[in-house]
Length: 213
Image (cartoon, rainbow, N blue to C red):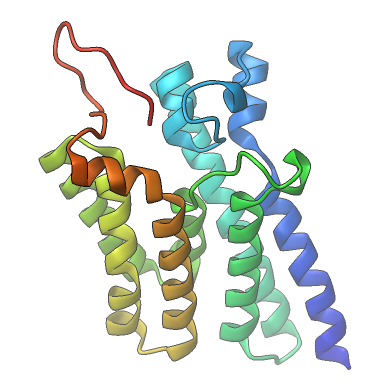
């Protein structure tokens, strides 16, 4: 019963933190733009960068990672203080925050992000080495392809493998795999454009026009 009571606090709190639409808040406050009505219409850092510039995109990235890391950190502390299974509590908090970012209650479950930054924030606490490996893969693929979606998909794909290799935890690996599946699902349109060769690039050459992501 005690465990259930704690979970009934962790799950909604983590979800509500994950639901905070930092991309929308920052662009409305600092750039007078409605990110849900421009570009790809989602609140993620990539769309913010495209619509409001790199500085706000970077700030959104930081905030989205933080809203993934904070619930996991708090759940871990709560589990340790009460001698409860830390991995289970932290992965539940992580998945709840991740779900909040994808389907934010504050936006009526629409216009959520694609989960990459929030998922990275979660695993920066859960499995730092695995997260670093995924980030390095993300950066490498972006440098090679000049496409943010390709880097995101590659980083997400390697995450469950790197989590398993660095921690050996079935619980964390399963959590990483669930996130990877949803990240790929949220990138369905990007995958189709990548296969068709029409996915927009990050850095444009002179005279090129940026297509919608």
